[in-house]
Figure (cartoon, rainbow, N blue to C red):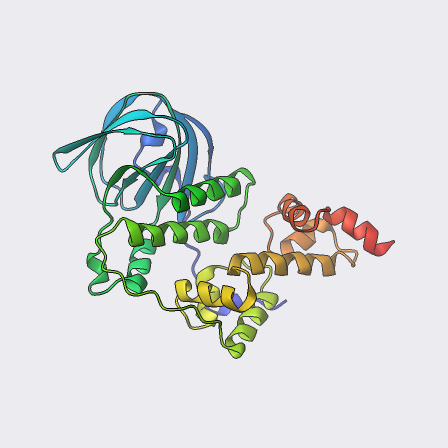
Length: 307
């Protein structure tokens, strides 16, 4: 396989770690069940935990925070810009904190939560495509207690990726972009553009993208890379690609990697080597994805096709 991706000089974005969060998660009262630390995700940070009652103040963070309440109700008090807001937040309620805001919070009961941090750059990117006028001036508006089925679903998808130890930055990026778009559409000061109907990719561009994927299965491909091949923004590319193929770019890439693994499983290559050549972090990552899509393991598939 060629490594065409290297010639385009895409720099690896920095990994999003707990050190880049507000510090809520490092309080001694909280018991973290799982986090995205160690998965190499760059656009999204996710953590699941049990929080106990506390009160504290936190400095502004450069990225946006969404907290989903997994149980409840529980009373939460938040202070920003000298104004205090107190709400009884039900199960499924959200706490949305924009980037660049100092705040104080008091949690008055024990609570299970999901924390999701979304990079500010994705908010700016979404605003540039979805908004009228000066997108740089678009602000995310703080929320407490609101419920949003799309954000809740995205949060649980991110946790599924985390529990399955999905090392793909793309999987996390797809969730982060979904969250960014929803924040702009529903919880911002933006004046939105009318949504244009989705058209499929032109045949030439679709062939180019598919060829690029096949030639670079082993690379750490990103949505930005593929949208660059099509000369489109990531948001428009995703919509047009799905219209053309019936699959999201991430789903199509995963299927292409599994098909590549099937071809290589007919050879004598070690399964660990096949995993690497098809873009999986390790053999267990390949096995999990392979079983999920085919209902069998790579080893069983190999025995069947070579018998």
